[in-house]
Length: 162
Image 1 (tube, rainbow, N blue to C red):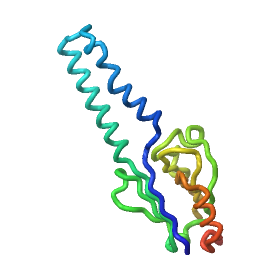
Image 2 (image 1 turned 90 degrees about the vertical axis):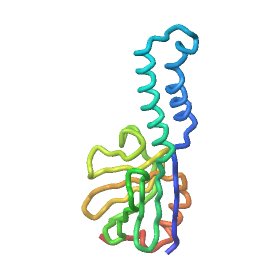
Image 3 (image 1 turned 45 degrees about the horizontal axis):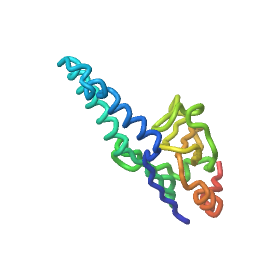
């Protein structure tokens, strides 16, 4: 079986611009000397710590996806400590499709309104839709849709019997 591997991170420029603005805008009045009350400094310090934790998490977050003869392997670091595997024998179908992250899943990250329909994505609107034999669906975002489609089509494993 031809193998597929992909690693993705949050690299959208607009996301980092929003975070940069969120980290700096609260300090503008202080830098201009308009306000210097101690309690406001403590509030800003607490907010800054929270924002830097969020930025740190976004830097750490990574989606790893791999297909091989065993199945579909995935890990959403730092939320999954170990790689998880979906065996081919448990998969009814697998296809690359276009989706609407906000409308279908509520955005990017580990998303889904129920355990029956989950998504693991960090950007874009293309993904590997896996339908399990138990009816559950899992979507894995991809930036290599053409390569993934070609691999699924060329492998006998993609033609899973129910």
